[in-house]
Every structure is written in C-alpha cells, then in structure tokens.
Image 1 (spheres, protein in one colour):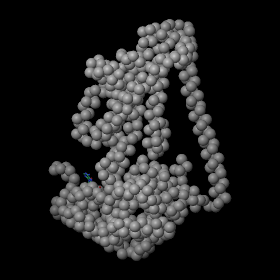
Image 2 (image 1 turned 60 degrees about the vertical axis):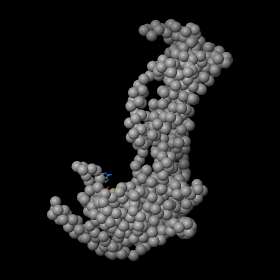
Image 3 (image 1 turned 30 degrees about the vertical axis):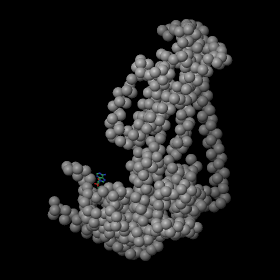
Image 4 (image 1 turned 135 degrees about the horizontal axis):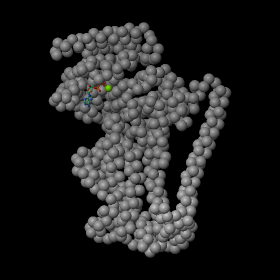
Length: 316
Length: 291
Ligand SMILES: Nc1ncnc2c1ncn2[C@@H]1O[C@H](COP(=O)(O)OP(=O)(O)O)[C@@H](O)[C@H]1O
Ligand SMILES: [Mg+2]
C-alpha cells in the first residue's frame, strides 16, 4: 500500500529526483514537501496512522476467527445435546455416538498403528493420482488452449466423461486394471484430471495478445513465449484448477476406497459401519474432511509464490 | 532539462560502445522503405482496406510521427513495419530486407498494459537481452543500465502492477531499447496518460533518443505531440487510410517544454493544421469523384 502511494507520487517526471538514477520513493516525496520539518511531522503522523491501522486489521481478523471457532463449538454442543437426549425428529440421533465417545475412540485410534496406516495409504494414492493428473492435465490444457485441432479432438471426450461420477467408474476400473490399488488410483486421477484441464484451457485462452506481440518484438521464440508469457499468464486459472482438483481427488478416492481396497481412510470409515463401530465412522469422516482441507490449503500455499506478482500478492 | 543524470548517461554510452564493437551499431541502419503498400483485412464481402497505396521512405536516425484520426490505419502501418501484419500488396523493407516477421531489430512500445505482469520491472527489461542469448548476469546488468536511463533504478524489484501508468511506459521504453534496436516503433505510447505526465514523457523520450539516434516511428493523433517530437510528420487520412501529407519539422533540438508555447511552434502548428485540412478536403473530393 505504501509502495503504491509512493509510485503515484512519483508519476510526474518534472522533478529531477524522479529521474535521477538512484532516486527512490522517499526522495520524490521529499521533493514535494514544502519543508523538512513539515515532512518529518508528516512521516511521524503517517507511521502512527499505519500502526493503528495494522492493529485494527489484526483485531478485526482475530474477531472473525473467534466467530468461526464459536460456530464450530456450537455445532459440537448441539451434537452433544442431540445425542445425549436421543432426539428423533425425522433425523434419528439414537444411534449416533456422542462427541465424548468419539473423542475417547479417537484417542484409542491415535494410540494404535492401524489408523496411521489407513491415512498413509490414502495419502499415497492421492499423491500418485494427483501428480499424474496435474502433469497430464496441464499438458493437455496448454495443448488445447494453443491448438484448435487439439481442442476439437480432446474436448468431446472431456465433455462426455466429466459428468460421470467416480462411483460409476468402479466396475469398469476393476475389470480393466490389474490391481485394486491401480483401480483406486485411476478413479482418483480421473476425478482430479478434469478441473485441471478445463482451468488450464481457460487460462491459456485468455493470453493477452499484446504481451505475445511484445515478446515477439523482443526476439522470443515460440517456446520462450510459452514459458514466459502463456503459462505465467494462465497461472492464476491453473492454480484455481489445482485447488479444485485436490477436493475432487479426495471424494473420488473415497468412492474407490469404500468399494474396494484393504486400507485407506475410506475403507476404514466403511468397515467401521459394517463392524458396528459407530464412533469410528465419525472419526473417519472428520479425518477425510480435515485431510481434504489441509491438502487443498497446501496446494494453494505451494502455488502462492507463482502468483506473487498479482495485486493481491498471491496471498491465499 | 535535467532528465538524465550524467552517471546514467555515461553508463549507456559505455554499453552502446560495447555493442558497437559486437557489430550491433545503429549508425546507418534503420532505413525503412514502404512502396505501394495496401493492407486489407477480412475476405470478400467483409473486406476492410486499412492502408491504401502507402509510399514512404524513412532514413536512419529520423524521428517520424504518423499522424491521423483514429481508425485511419496508423497502427496497421506500424504493425506492418513491426512484422505483425503482412501487406496485401506492395513491398516493405527495413535495411533492404523484406519484413516478414517481428524481430529484435525493431523494438516496439505499446499504448499500455504491455509489461509482463509476472516479471519484476528489471526482469521485464532483461527479457530482450536474455532472448538474444545474453547470460542472466549480462542481461540484468543491461536492464539496470536502462532502468537508470529512464530513472526507475529504484523500482527494479517492483512488479508492474505497483507502478503508475507513466512509470510503466518508461519501463516499456527501457525494455524496447535494451535490445539496441535500429528502429523504435511507438504506438500512441503516451495516449493513456494525463496531459501533465505526457509532456514530461515527451521531453524524457527526446532526452533518451539523443543518446541513441535510432530511427523512431511514433504513432499519434495529437498534432502538438507530433510537432514537438518529430523531424517529419506523415499525415494519414481515414477510410481508406492513405498518406496525404509529409511535413518537415525543422525546429531546433534539443526541444523543451517551453517550445510548446513559443511563436515558432505556433506558426508551424498552424501551417500543419492548414495543410492537413487542405489535404483532407482533397482526399475527400477525390474519393467522391472515384465513388
Ligand atoms: N486485425 C484486424 N482485422 C480487421 N480489421 C482491422 C484489423 N486491424 C485494424 N483493422 C481495421 O483497420 C482500420 C485501421 O485501424 P488502425 O490501424 O487500428 O487505425 P488507427 O491506429 O489509425 O486508429 C480500422 O477500420 C480497423 O477496424
Ligand atoms: Mg491505433
């Protein structure tokens, strides 16, 4: 914000300070100020103002997080009341475990090793499937965005396959692929692929013509234009695609793990139901929710350096 | 005007001397020849004739303004020199070579939003040298030199989004010059700036150009800007875009802001206006006869 203000001040090129090689923003501001003392006073006032503004923003932010935490606590309280009083108004809470039981069971799971194995298996599948989807998705997306031919050949497949939910792929995946593991990875990969492709195409097609022309004038080859202009320009859209894809990857994975597999957090959740371990169902669900959220956040954080140039500074 | 500090000027001279050794001397280069050029867009039925029978010779080191109302084909002609559009008929050469595609010998400054937003100011300027095969270190050093030249050394690490419009255009000029082009093409580069900033940018541009003396083709629809900047004004008329006048501007250089209100300037501007009016009427009459 400070930077922006200074830049605006420096716009008129009338001042020698502005054009001197080592002039910096302060020097320009100085040149505008009527006299030194006045300027110093302004500086002090401005600094104080900035401090107050920063403190205010921090307070505002903590207040919002407080509200969010309170909202979650309220849900737990409601859950507690509904289960301890066995509420049964259309939705039946009689068989739902109480929060305290879930907490206790959770501690038990954390103490054992099985639970971690389930998580590790799910994470591994996500990593492989998501990695493949990102590489192939971005490649296809760039290809489609750059070539009408490629787009006309690939797009019909995407449009046709995209609405098919992950669960519907399970029979065919099991029939076609050699192992259960590969079926689950395939289904997860497919779920993640479409958002990556479509967002990449969208980003690439928005490439600014002026920037491509500017690069050509500067002697850039087609390949350099791809790396220096088209892909960075598409990056905000690609990052959105990557974040969405992570969410989709998780629910595709879960569909696969519920139906087949021996490990995985989806498998854990579903077997808990068949084994009548109700608290474990809730533990499984919450773990899925948490892992999904965390991995999406991780994707955004990992990509944010690529978007630092945006006016928002690429903040998540 | 004290636009460029002695230090930065020295630095640039050193660089051009360096480049001169490596056969990239601008002297004597940058001759543009446009002969019988028509440029048309679209196919039968929906055809636009953007430029009609353009004949124009621009010599090495000349500062020429293409002046005309908007839509008359100035940008199209400039883009043809840049190599972005090919003439439908006629021939266009730069230094004897037919223009078929863009190249680093012809630098271009656009009206606005042409910096790479994801590259820092310095990396924007370093891009040309990098593409020409310079090492990262060389390219950065050239970039710093040119940023000093336009007075933006302190903003090397900023992103374009954090710069004002005028500053962005100065970076655009530095970026185009960093390749030591023999021709600098400028398409209304100050058209989006406020009047105050524009005058400063014009003065600044002339200061910089004094160091390079390369050929400049500068598109504008502002007659004051054309008279203030150029050695020659090539006037175009609308639909179809043709060249209707070629006016010599022999005001002494260096030119400064005060010139804009001087009697010589006024006299010259009035002559230009009268000539343009006369030629525009002529063009219309001929067109009516033809139609
Ligand atoms: N790529 C294009 N396709 C079709 N028509 C174009 C194209 N570029 C320019 N034109 C037309 O050519 C004419 C001249 O345009 P332009 O050179 O941009 O004018 P100026 O720069 O003088 O304002 C206009 O009528 C414009 O609509
Ligand atoms: Mg134009």
